[in-house]
Length: 302
Image (cartoon, rainbow, N blue to C red; front, side, top):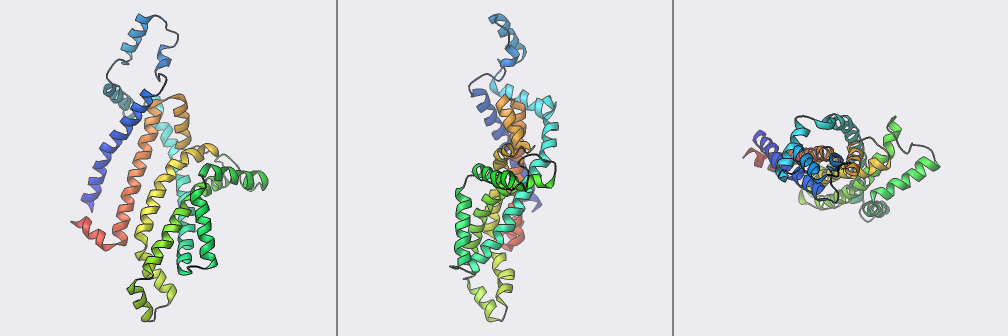
């Protein structure tokens, strides 16, 4: 297990290099010169060329990328790390709250819908999940702001001063993920409860709720964990938009501000943070496989 974890951590190095280098190329090839502030007000071609040479703007792209990464990771130019470390807890708090909402709603809905297949609850839950899958998160964000904030006045529409401020953005992020997870929970549970060992457990006199809790749900968790891990990764990407709608001071809002002002070190810092979070989430998902399925754990031991 330790060897596998170390191997996955080593794989993160080329992943981070590839992601950041691609983002750097995209920002440099985008219309407009991100270094034009250095040349602002200079009209003499010889002076422009001298300034470009002094700032290394004529160096090969890989050299400029290495210089930018050095300024970001070692020198902390522009206090990028300081700003990201200040914003990261806000994004982590929002993602954690959205995950609790998504999983806390999805698992009971999916399990009950599978146990009571073709019932009114099953039809209603599938309709609710269909709405969640189909509705864009930014549209849902606008709806909850209009209803719960402007009309009812229950929760603030922006800020991070109190626990009420996180309710609407967390619900907006978690609702869409709840729809995906509840659908996969229902389908996985339907496949599991039709297995022979479930009928055997019932034949031995075990109550149906105990069979569902101790046997069916545990064996149905592998696909649920897979989808939940993927959706948790998408929480961070979805937070980029939601944080701007609700004025939540997280990394997503910081990234949008950096994109608007073409601050390449800040953009790379945000991308590195998201890539590290995605890698660790995928690693945790793989470790959860081994926890719930002994067959996967035996593969890790090899």
